[in-house]
Amino acid sequence: MGTIFIAGSYGVGKSTLCSALSKALTIPAYSAGDLISNVNGEQYGANKAVKDKEANQDLLAMEIKKKLEQYPTILLAGHFCIFNKLNCVEELPHSVFEKISIERILLLEADPEQILANLSVRDKKKYENQQIERLIREERRVAEEISQKCNRNLHIHHMTFDASDLKKCYDLLSSEVQAV
Image (cartoon, one colour):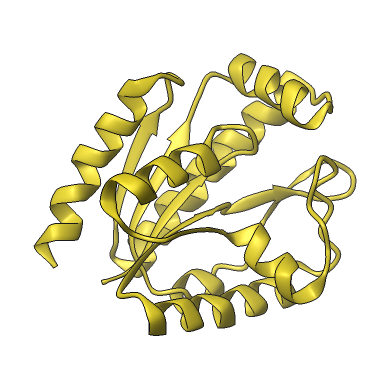
């Protein structure tokens, strides 16, 4: 099948949901940031600073290709947009999304206040509400563009951070995964 891309802003719950979906669907799950840092050695902890987004996306495409040689379908947690060093939103190069064999896009969204709380606990970093709102807006805009450009289904799920997230996303994806 290919890559089921689980996208969303920082702190929206991509990794947690991917891990649960991986177990439920018996599909391996990966984090785009982890795959990149395993090759280039950069660590993307609380600061999230990226030195060379274009080179990183090439690394990601190579790593995804290797994973898809091992497994017919994978879950990939990642972003369409990131913050740069000045905490301004930057789009990732669109070309990478064609290279990573996206079959489905699941965009996770949540209330900005909840994302801010999650980031405060997880990363011990404070962002401004307007920064997170802009990131959420831009993530959706680019997800819609990539969905149209690649002719792939885009599903948007509003996170409630309870068991219903896994159930709804499992129900959404399980029929698509089994249909292939």
